[in-house]
Amino acid sequence: MTSRSIRRVAATALAATTALTAAACAAPDEGRGGGKPTDTAVVGIAFEPETLSPLLGYGKDGNSKIFDGLLTHDAGMRLAPALAAALPKVTDGGKTYTFTLRKGVTFSDGKPFTADDVVFTYATILDEKTNNASKAELDALDKVEKKDDRTVVFHLKYPYAPFAERTVLPIAPEHIAGKQDVNTGDFAAHPVGTGPYVLTKWSKGEKLTFTANPHYWGGAPKVKHLTMAVIKDDDIRATRLRSGDLDGAILPPELAATFKGDKSRTTLAAKTFDYRNVTLPSANPVTGDRAVRQALDLAVDRQAMVKGILSGAGKPAYGPVPTDSPWFAKGTERPHDLAGAQRILDDAGWKKGADGIRAKDGQRAGFTLWFLSGDKLRQEHALAFASDAKKAGIEVKVESGTWEAIEPNMKHDAVLAGGGSPADPDFDQYLLLHSSLAGDGFNNMSRYADKTVDEQLVAARRTDDHQARKAAYDTVQRELVKNPAYIFLTHVDHVYVTDDRWKDLTTQVEPHDHGLASGPWWNVEDWQPAK
Image 1 (spheres, one colour):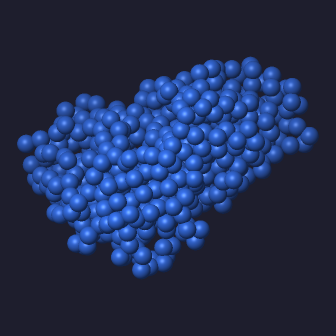
Image 2 (cartoon, rainbow, N blue to C red):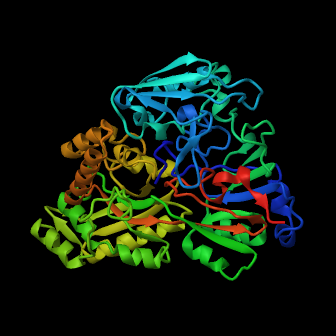
Image 3 (spheres, rainbow, N blue to C red):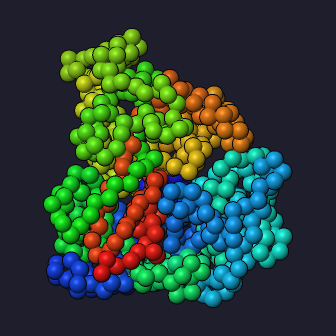
């Protein structure tokens, strides 16, 4: 599913421009270029966040547009200074990070940004009273110290190699957010930040609208009005793009392919760490059985899913790490082996009945698999998984629903989920697999508990020795082969279709979340009109 940073939403997304209503009502030819202002952009995304407060998890991976972090990622996913004037000075054997802050930065309300805001942001997230599902990502942080108005020092409990990656986290203004209840205050819906855009309106379930921050320290954006329309249904998003309502949208590969002959639009594919998997809840007597898990892991035809569902825009997934990543454990690839799956089930006592469905000790080999309604990729993955499972004698009943409908059933029912972070293997695997997070919202949805995996996840995050970390994550991936608490299906390239009235659009390597933080609009503040 799901964004690991925000408890309920599978993907970080946003929306913006005060001109959406006019754009939505415009005739198609107006939307195709000349009739639309060159300083206005409208893009379609699939999901919106529950909160816009970084204190509650919003924007933790960067590119939030309303806010900035101390650091950011450039086009090549390298860390670069943002609110910090330079990359941090690292001392004390990797346990102390010192940042010098950029001069002259103000929040969008005109108040100055200082070290106090940095200390406030991190201290609030770490406070046990704060409902931030991702605070475990800052486990290494002991305290944050203000040395002076332009110097902040982070003291770690232990050397944590990817700590600098954590400082892309947005900084909130103490003078506003500090005067409210962090969990219930209106800052979560009416944020103020230092970023290139200012939120003007949030119509939940429909759109977010933004205007350019004319005092942005990075220079005033050329796109003055930005709208991200929240369109959960893939087909409707494609229709609105085709009609000219949208300047760009994320689409499933097969829908994006329908724009191939449109010479006024461009298709961009972003490489990602984004996977689709099936959770196998340990509390369910069928999905909690190790033999069933191992059999399903062999029964699924990953290559067929890449070819048929993704139209080649992706690759088979054997775990949270893509096969072309240096963090991938070679040798953990699994073949499509239906005969092998059947042997495992036979040997474990799961015998086929007259209808071809297996049973053991009176327990029928069947379970429910949920997917998010309106999400064609999840639907098609779920149906393909169910088809493959049936061939092995396991009956999977596919259901659709909203996350609000799905979440209460996650303890016993399977979910067509998703995740993935390119920044560091710790960012995704700890939340996905560590037993301390079993059943914690959308973290560790399978309620997986494995002593070796727990030990290796902790060991990997408590050292900055690359070889030691690689060995630990290799062990985690091999343990998942033995006891696959999740069936990983595919790693999905994100496909976007954009209007050619904008030039030189690019994408980054993307995480699972694909909203305002990703896509060709990752740097919308730098967009230039084609004419």
